[in-house]
Structures are given as structure tokens and as C-alpha cells.
Image 1: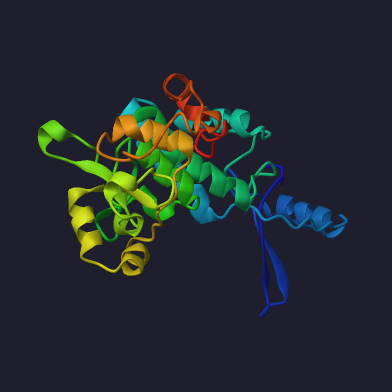
Image 2: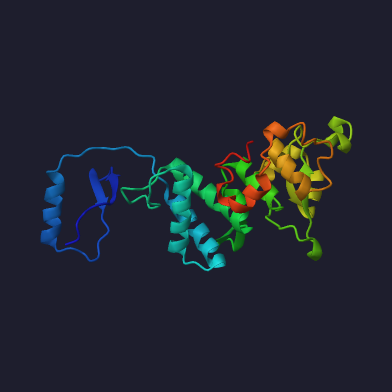
Length: 283
């Protein structure tokens, strides 16, 4: 008989029964089932409330790691294990399970953080923008719709010249342009030549969504696409002067030298997966 280690409890108000749904390899004999019921009935119960990850989070993690792995040539379990190990090392977490049925299941908060990590890791480390295929609606849902930490997500797109709305990659030779867009009007500073990149909020948009943003009230655009612009740090502006040569003309790196990591370019290339943990995005 399979040993009962985990299961799902559900209270049935109509029958006034507490039901335990128990995963087994085969249906146990009535005598074995009766024995297990007697053991449970005579065993003290200790309630331990836990905000475990949801079933939707478990499925999303599996879908994201499956797509990510398929692109890189890994099976889903291997890709998930690689990312989980890096995530745990990065944030100094103990190993956890992504199944809410396991005793080592992670919390709702950790699962949310892990989902953000997978999305940003794909963009920063491998220049990959993930999509979730909705088979019912027959459409590809951009990972943006599953992000909770918008600052890190917008930074990831900024560093890799991707549109925050659709994930379009900047490919000038193919006619795909992704540039930094000021969500706040540059005119408030007087002119673009006075923009040092530190005062106005912005994000990266492809031409299509840049035009849509210009034709739409900002708050309506933000609400429709469920995304928000950010203010850049001195370090990000210093990077942006090289990524987006036409922007941030008024930024004086010498003025902000104490607040800019001089080794940032080399660091980004060698330690992309550790970018946010090391504080580069917030410097």
C-alpha cells in the first residue's frame, strides 16, 4: 500500500466530512483503506497555516521553464532545476519545491519572485522574451502580463533594447527599431538637450507602440498594457548613453561619478544573472 505522506484536504459541508484526496499508484484494498482511515482518525492533528504557491503559479513556472528550455535545448525539469539553483544561490534561499503538494513547497511570495526571476533571466542572460501559449484563446501571451516587479522588468528590457509591451527586439537591419521613450514630456525640462535621464520617467518601446503611446493619454496606455515607466539611476543612464546615443545628452558622468559603477559594462557582460542582486539597477 502506498504510504500517505501528502494530499489535499477538503471539507464537505453537505456530508459534514473532511475529505482527503490521496494520490496513489493503484487503488488500495478496502482493508488497507480502512486501516489507513483508522490511523488518521487516531492521529493528533496539528494545523500549520502556510501561504503556499498556488496551482496557477506552479503551472506558470512549468510553462515558462518549458519554453525557455526548449529554446536553449533543455528539457523542462532540467531547465527549472538550473534556474531554481541559481535563484536560491542569488537570494540565499533554501531549496524548495514548486509543487504545493510537497512539504518543501515554496511560499506564494517566493513563487512570485521566482516567476519574475525566470522572465528577467531570459531577457538579460540570453536575450529571450518568453511567451505563454493560451490554447483556448489561441494566442501567445507576452510575459509582461505575468510580471509583478515592473521596475526590474523594465530595466531588463532597457538593457537589451526590447519593447516593454510586446518584447520586440531592436534589429535595425531588419527595420525593427526599439528606442527609449520618455513617458513624461521632455518639454517640461525646456528641451531634449537638457535631459540628463534622471528626472523623467521612461521605458523602451518599438515604433508601433511608441506611436500608440503618443496617440493615447499616458494613464490610459499604462492601464491598457498593464505597465509603468520608471526613473533611471545614474548607472543606468551611463549605460543608456551607449545603448541609446541620441538620449541623455545633458548627463555628465563626471558629476555622478561617485554614484556610477565604473566597471558596470564589464560586470553586465560577466554577471548578467546577478544584475539586480548586486544593485546595479538601483545604484
